[in-house]
Length: 423
Image (cartoon, rainbow, N blue to C red; front, side, top):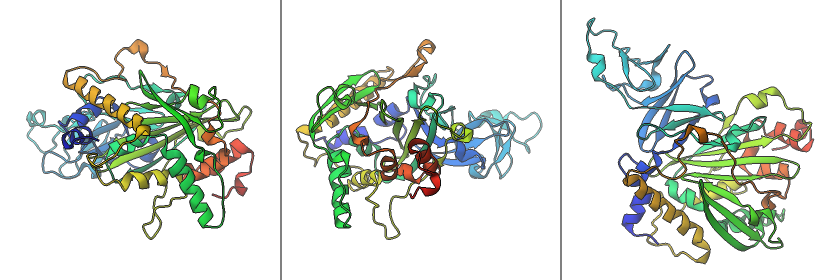
């Protein structure tokens, strides 16, 4: 249970708020590179700010305030320039830092352009995503987590806007028990109701859970019924990467995957959610080059035409549980049990790192040393028990089944011709 004041401190993300100041010390994805292939601009709402991501005529990205400081016209409809973007209203030109470069109708020699500017934030490309940093300068180095940078993988990314605060989404990631019920027992119940009973690996009962702090966040471990204590689910586990990412994967079998769920607050009551997957093709697999060159971005469905959650899918089961807690969960009313130790661990870490920022320190998992800017290998479970139902089943129960490359993935990883794949 948290007090009202503690809940405010951890959930509010606007400029100047404690959690907002902490989150601004990290790089966050704002878009997929592929989303900008056929457009020059994209609206971005992040940490309570309305911005525009643009691509100039050289192909460089910039992230700046959404409206021109002249007459407040939207730069979403701006004119791309060689080195920036022009306001469509009067042609004022801005670069990616928000600096005004030109005011075409001001007198020659005027220095007025030097007196106006927009918010401008640094952006970088990594793993087919565009990442932004909204905090104080100098910016830390962007962490090169393995699945985003490992060569030779097939990658895709789902994204959606979730109608709730970012913290209740993150707390889901330090709550292992929900998997056997929300993703296991609920799914099996729905199948029985439809007359198609099915037992899934993810409904196995938890025997033990544990949480260990490591330099990048928290490693979450579990021992499931029927497993011995040398199982990788218990000896290795998988991490919650501080402050807002879950990393889940599996290796050691016929296929290896890296999966990241990234929760980027739009504002206090909505969150941009990214489901990023990187698959290592089986040895000898023939992979079309285009699958290695681009990262498609897609939006999986969440509700049907009647507004009901599509609960047969794992990602929707999560979203239902997050959104039905309300826009911002009232943690004064919760009743935590012994299995909620992960929530307590994460909240204490969050409170500690907010205090570090307030004291003028870098929070954990930020990188300043260029010598340390190498690929970060995160814990990767081997033959993860929850993935025991097979590649095709895993893909279809998750939002990955809605990816435009899903049939090709199933063909590559199972040998089943993509023409016969029913999604």
